[in-house]
Length: 443
Ligand code: ADP
Image (cartoon, rainbow, N blue to C red; front, side):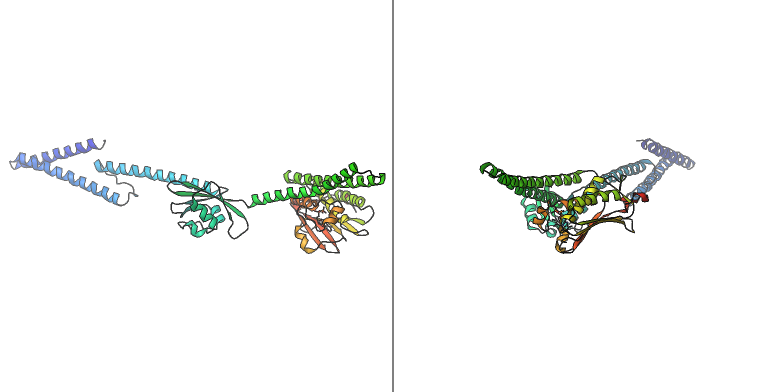
């Protein structure tokens, strides 16, 4: 109300001044009262004209959309302009705050590990994050406003969306690639829907691997157990000679060793999968490691093969000594097991020009046909099951080797020619390789 008093006072002052001037003029002509009345009316007219001009400035500001600064005018119109401008500023600020909240909310949904898609009451796409678009094969900009059932045409999805029973998610394939997707639907607002999509390919693969592992382990353990229980029954029911008893006990011992080997390898794998990454600052001298493996290979071969250790550069590897020894020993043991008597086994290592270290186990054994090579490192994959079992194999050796080398940031390479022999190579990255002083090398 601080505009009112000055305006009233100014009007009164103008009227008083007009009346006084009119009275002065009127008195000279002998009509003082009429002059005063005319002067007052003239002053009032002038005040109204000034007011009209102010109102016009206000109107033209309002018509201009109020983006420009409000006109600085006094009186009632100035007060109106000020109040309109203030409420406009408050509304703009509220809008900015709302937009900030909305974009924060949308970027949080964008960062969600699941796809999120919003549908309006007619099942048109209102909004979706990049992950939902990827999962459903949509283009977030182009497809906005389109009916989702025109774009995701899987009958299972359409029936689920339109069925209205959304307690369970619906399973779909990923568009254009292998994999599975779960889509959950939730109703909200006035007939709108929220869709949450989740890529479950890895989870399903993990479930399948676990199922396969349990089936494989059960299968592997069942055969020795059957043999053992058969022998136990025979020993209980039949009177056996000392020689027969001895033969049976030997076979029983072999079967229980087979189970022990299997359990030991399974434990190694479990430890590798759950264990911490191999250290990057513990250096294992390679020459010592290879010497240890070669000594073991000589012992396992029992003189049936020529085992050679070809010394390479003096190198050390950063990582777990136990894991590296186990990996190279597995390769050397396989070389002995899959090389007929009289064959040659060669262990060597070298530093590649790019700084990688390569550990090689070469044999002149039975070799492996090309088609088996990609599957060799799968658990329980065997090219020749009977030979693997006869020689005490568990089918887990190369799976262990692959795990170890991957944990050290390297790869396992295999070259093999059926009937000619094989070459298994562990290749480790330069970050885990360093040269050692020369006296560490084995010549
Ligand atoms: P296993 O315990 O059966 O030897 P591995 O995982 O160590 O299991 O090896 C998988 C399969 O790869 C073996 O069953 C065998 O058929 C083949 N294999 C591994 N090493 C050699 C080799 N040096 N020469 C020929 N075949 C091999």
